[in-house]
Image (cartoon, rainbow, N blue to C red; front, side, top):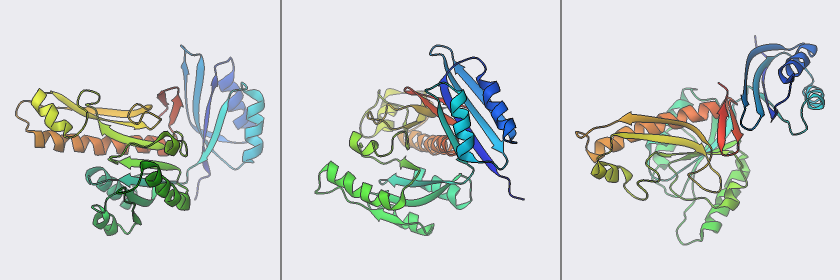
Length: 280
């Protein structure tokens, strides 16, 4: 039997009785509350709530009813349990993309990968193994704006819910990001800003670092400074070569991005300023 499940996401100024008003409205519409999480940021007096609902109801009327009872600045979203659509952008490194493709193949992420877009042809054979569309969009001989415009034209054909940067090694212009506000997820090593540029693991090896890690975050106008979704670290020591550090780091990157995507795809992430609130 198919369950009619929806996720209700609300964030607004905090006020007395918000939880009662929301849950009472759900009760009046005959909905069953399967799961409920809430959080108040006391520094900003801001309220967040994620409620999983089960039942049949008039979505538009329900949302209008809720809006009349909540603060004027309330953001209200209602999401179904259908898989989100994503397009992956990649360059040459295979580890993150390969992990996503395998998870997608075995239905381990709540998403449909519509296509992979790359500025190199290196990963096309890998993508072809999974019978997914691969688009090569060269950046050679064209300005960055023109290259990004070519990608945007491709993306318009798919209309994805999210873009995923699977080690896509090009900085995106703000004008590109504006097309997908809070809908671009990136992964990078956690050495920034200490080790910038090429060969960060070699730099880390030469410095003798003891912890390496990865950060998954939303992309804003500052590529690597958007709201953080998930992070993780692993310990290393003097016995690690630069190559072994890189292998360990790549494993962490793949896992962290997958974890971040699962949170985003299951509607568990709120963006508040340059931070995230995750109601798992």
